[in-house]
Image 1 (cartoon, helix red, strand yellow):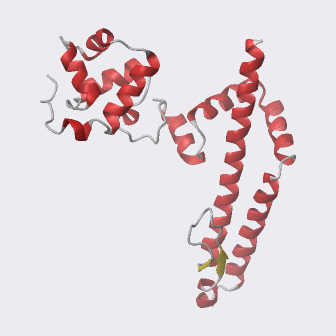
Image 2 (tube, rainbow, N blue to C red):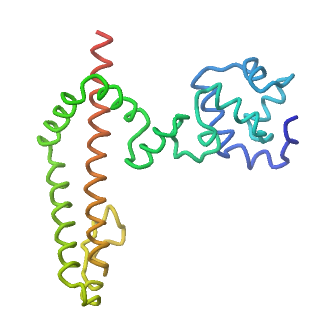
Length: 217
């Protein structure tokens, strides 16, 4: 039995679950008749309740919908950061790198075909872009800040007073902030990582589009 309809229907219409369900229904052109079967309900009114948010799903209904659409239950509940895949490994990679689900799957396919060739192509493209300077600068700053911390192991105040230049796009307040040298090192290291994965995301998008266009021809 589904849960009783919620009286705050309008408030729940844009909640994560009904929003995700409506998106999946539209993407897959799923009819209400199909949803009746998936949800094991007898009438369209019950289906409509899940779609507009007036009825909350029980665990068995949630699992049934996730299996039918090939997504995770977390995605339906708005807890996956927008990653649809039920594959825990893919979700973990997306969370760690910031890559989209599509990019992770594309990389997996390419590496599976020829990891050495693909890696060489990526590195060649990376070295030909300006982003390599941003990555190099960030890594150099990370090492510099780490050295400051190591060279002042007994003088904590001088380490804490180390000033880290802040990029306005990363911190709207801009300017500088007092920060521990080791924390500053981690900051620059994370920025280098973020720049790298942003490059990979753009690389994948461009190459996947080119592959699609070549396939169409």
